[in-house]
Length: 265
Length: 261
Image (cartoon, rainbow over all chains, first blue to last red; front, side, top):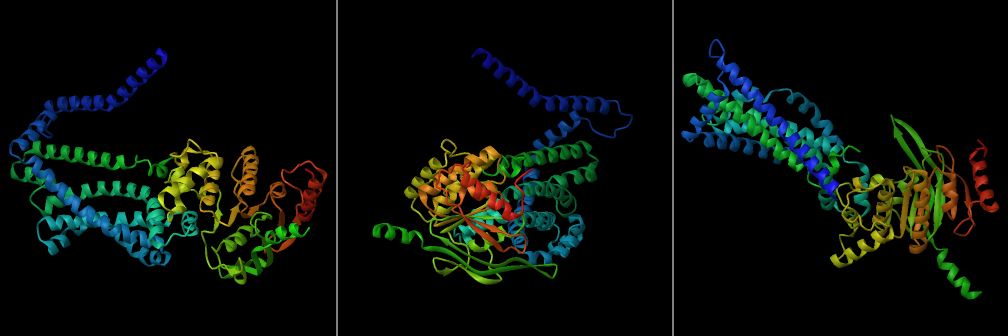
């Protein structure tokens, strides 16, 4: 009994150790960064202490939350709009082989065009403002989601569809009792990766098309007074939020009825 | 004597009739005949094995019987009605890959029971979980089960909708030889309890002779029926009895295999 407990305790310590390791590593990097920043010949990069001061400055001026919310707002709209349109269309394309043959060439031509190449057109159509940025995020998210959904639908095994028909499911039931559960694990992976892309695009879009948000913060801090502490502060916040978004999407992959799609066997 | 006959007659009722069925696939613009002029009558409650070499078209015939594929010519009838598509009275059991990985054991067995009221649905789920020996695994997902358990789960899901017929496509092909033997016993036990008409595709001669009332021996592609062998050995079968061995060796010879290695 006591030995089981001991083993459990040891295991617990090991787990805590594993969880602590990245934190220790980050701390070590911060120390190294601070040291390097203090000994640089010219002021090329603010150190972590200065950056923290920049973040504190943003908080003091009530800008931090405002910019984060502005960026998240654009990403949410662009991403959700893209998901709502691209997923059903993609599923339909993957489901009907003829549709895929028709759509595939145009998808493959549009795909290599960076969403940033659309910036001039976005501004021409929507002016400088939220709509232009949302449009860019939409463009950046739409095709990846379309391709993911089409692949997911194409990969539904015939066995499952035939089983559904065999048990007398009509089209509606077949859709939500077979097609939907069969594609959801692949869709979640696609959504997670695409959300990362959308978060990349929003920063670029905000540098050009709007005057709020984390991307705007970075470009504005440089233009308005070479406040590189704010530039790096913006970068750090973008990184942390991107990380949190990914963690949030990853937690979906642990839902029990989705997990089959990620198991090794 | 008269009484005995009146019992025997309904048991001889034709359940499924395959009439002059041919299937031709088109591949690269060429016609590929898969099935040629198949004729077969299956009685109600009968256990039939379709036996033949891999790729000979057994599965194609089974797909046509189940309504997943319409024959190029000829007709298949069930209870005197032409088969037009799949039907929940006739359930196709794939290898264990047919279970839904996103549903639990309970969810899989209940899959075809959406038309039933909740209480009846739960009663049936419990009944068939018990029948196939999956008690204690109600909430488990397929990836937590062994191959044999998944196979039993799929059979339970099929039985739960109370079909007249089961189509089994090499259902035990992916199992290890010990599990396969156990599963054959289980299937016979279930068949004897429920008396469904079963069409069972296999390329395993022993399996066919152990299970079937009649073994339909098919030729290589394009498949024709070479011979229909009646296995008149009562269950449980003594698989070392002279008559059993005689029937089995007859099929070995029919397929062109010397019974020696």
